[in-house]
Image (cartoon, rainbow, N blue to C red; front, side, top):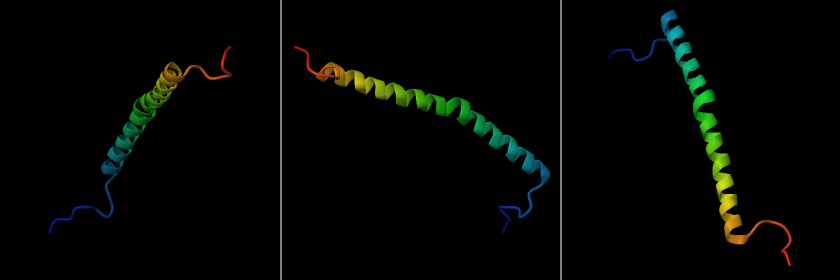
Length: 63
């Protein structure tokens, strides 16, 4: 039966793993999460906007 995982990975494996981890980190930190944050804030703003269209702006009722 072939060995699937080495007990001691080589230096080349370690270097490629570090490179891959760095690449994933930068993709998440500067790509995915900013888009998610903008989407969440934009979605919240859209919900507030729609609620104000349906029920009026917040505050005491005007005369």
